[in-house]
Length: 76
Image (cartoon, rainbow, N blue to C red; front, side, top):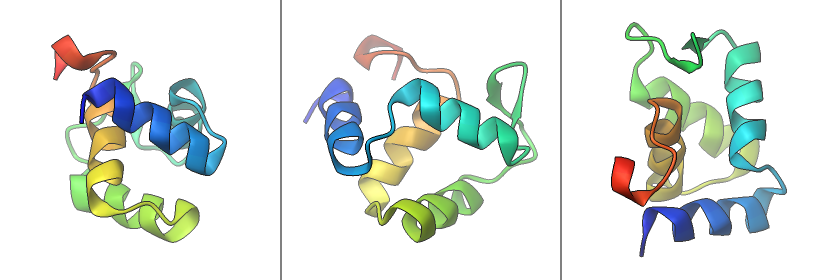
């Protein structure tokens, strides 16, 4: 499955697009300058996404990758 397919499936399941996840992560204090802070561990973000959005581990990690700055499959 491509990175974009993961993002599309996540949006279909949650109703939240990539920009929305960036806004939510920023509101939680996970981002600095639009990217995941180095001090924020992937496991913390994964736990949040599993709890609040019922995402599986792979889909949650796709969001972590997105928050680290990837915008499309070639960025992964």
